[in-house]
Length: 421
Image 1: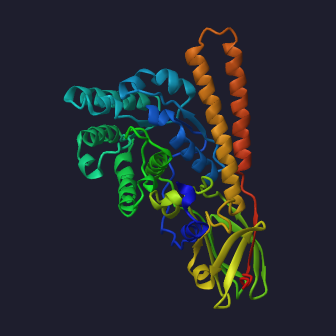
Image 2 (image 1 turned 30 degrees about the vertical axis):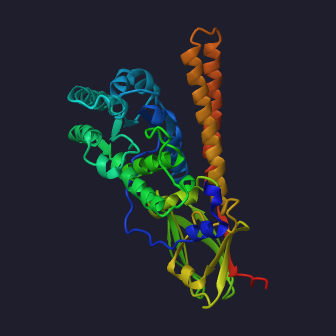
Image 3 (image 1 turned 135 degrees about the horizontal axis):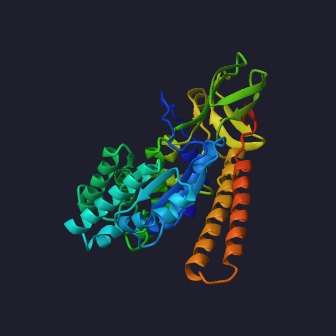
């Protein structure tokens, strides 16, 4: 369905002018952390966890963080509590992100006081066990179902999850309200669908069962958790006066080798971290999940250019598109800008695409090992399989970290060529 959008729509979504916020939050994932995702089949699908992993690697490349997915299909908070030692503590977790709820009430068939209390007791047990071992825990509310958001708001699942999050906060730990964040995305989807004539063109956050999440739903859940972890909006921002050949301000980056002739401008930009990019056409999903506006401010401001001209911006020879001088003067978010919607935009975009492939490979490797241990526990070479898997994973991690290391990008801002008649 995404491929029906013409390139003109893609570019209009990319070239958005955004003012950076005044302050930055402290991201809760620190250097040396081992982050474990604990949950049911929505977690076991591995998608939202990979987005959080990619964001962290790109935005904070100097931090060595390990990510482990411990999701299991059909699991409940009670099941997660029972396997804390095996799947969380034995793996060196320092941060635990917990997402349960829908299976705890049997997809709504067991929405009663007994199962609510079992959920709350289990959440309390997870928090207590983590505190005893110095693991920082984040209790998330469950992902939303496809139920109408107005009916679901204030319903049994939301109230139960609210109580679970309150338990975490009462014990000095953290909570993330996934449900309300996802409902905001769901309402944007419903508004868009109301204007869509063809049923096949309508969008959803869910698979056909109305419970499991599709790609957009997983993105909405990742966004909610990243915001809950304090993910900052600003990647980096630079303001250059082309007339004076001066860097007016630079946040999260260093500018060197600045030169120009009054119309064309060149400089090298070395960023502390990079924006999150998720591949071809995913930017179209940002209509519903505001990654671009709230997590991905990679800003370029150029003042002092002659008026009345459009300018092409290139980074390492890759075109980011053309911009009116007024847009450059007011600041442009170039995180997803591209002159061709079929290929990556800037080199940071290409880096992120490549990183996503490595993260997918690491995830598939872990899934293969899980299946082998789960269904072939008696195979005589299991120890060797585990050792080889660990070696392959360590190599992939090294590749991930090498790929995202910052390097200078060479920018050129020049008058755009006149369109051919």
